[in-house]
Length: 312
Image (cartoon, rainbow, N blue to C red; front, side, top):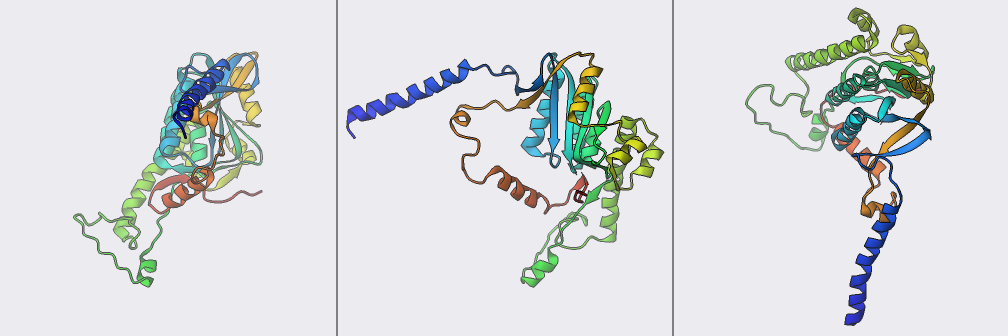
């Protein structure tokens, strides 16, 4: 390739980049000034923000993303109310409490109403108790108030493979819950103590959020699931309904006659604009998440999680 063609290519790509950026800036982006951009889902008028907790309680970067959305909704004076959509079986104890704490702070500043999807159980229910009111479909699954921990044992498999593990430690409980051996009675008692603390915190959050006596919550907190209809009768939820009903109620609590329901989304970078969202780079997001979920299950952790499946 001669020098003129090289020069033409060197000039073409920067010019193309400038042109694309210019075109992008011609189109207004809602909520551009904030960390998260806003997309209007329906309506006109004052803003009601939709926050979504779908799937297991997030961890890592996904958790920080959700918490930052809560912060933005709280700090944006133009947001008059918030509706929280929950379709989650729960997850880690620490992450669940972090979300609840952030939502409780938000609810202290502006109306927050929760709406259940098909499953809002254990940690999914825990976070919803931060809302002033809870809407649930009659057929939803909720409750599952309790704590669970799973610990896979690989010692039998290693023995079959002829692999031995030698553990050096200082402190007799240092390798507790490693999965390389069964728990001793003392270790089980220690772990049960952790679980009791987490359980008592769950009961406290439900009692505070639902204005129920702790003794009454403990009667309900045996780990079982409840249908939405049962939850309403037991005082675990307020009204039968769906997301649109919860959004209207949030606007009503804020004194709004009309409202615009908005959702947050990440601002798109330059290369994200150029490439389609499903561009095949490495593993697809679904495959990556499944791999991470599998790896996370191999370590010991306390969880507010419903492990069962749905009824329908």
